[in-house]
Length: 288
Image (cartoon, rainbow, N blue to C red; front, side, top):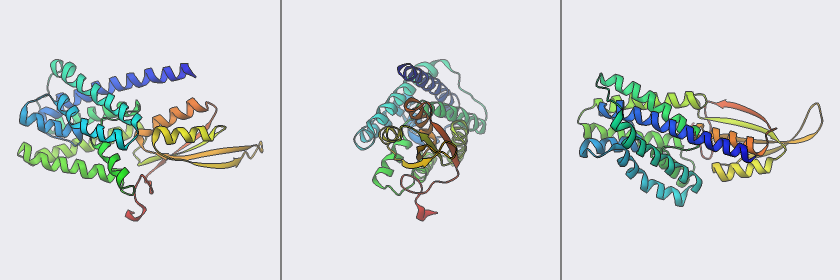
């Protein structure tokens, strides 16, 4: 068990570092020279960099610090620690490794937004696979969902990123900033979806296990979600068993997979891609 945990920890660190490097290259070499702000904390930082010429990485960290403080008191502390670590690593790599070494692409602005979106999406997907997030809009979305449980996180993120894109028009003094920023945001979202798990709102996971309560407790503690425990019986063996049923978002799937593997390596798991999820923590049923 300890060996598996150590192996997973090493894998998480490698994913986080690789993600931070790719994310930073996309931001520095393509997004920044295009004068666009494709949402999130880095979008605000890019606008700050345009106005003040301060380093993007440190500005991103400065934007995230008050959000992390709120997350510490209102969200899972484990989530906050992981997010803070990811934000710090991304900022350091961007300012002290990528910015001094990587060249800036000086070509077409559309190509900047497309390739920047691809690289940032790949980087964010790797960071998600490490069990972390890049902060910014994600933290704000979770905080809003905590205060207003029936507000979809997806809708909250759309509003936040839309506001940032709108402000970028006035900061960069051209409408193209928002249009190219929207293209970049769309591309990175699609890349993340493709790399993590499908293009869907979530994944329904059915777990047949001997340790349903242990898995359920870890889902509550580590993912800040809940699960349904359903008694069942094997058709061939006739033996009593239990199904743990839960639904998670793309950034949470790798953590759930690890929880199952560490708790019951003999569990039988069925994963169903979902096009939409309605209910508490997801989309409000009334909105459909």
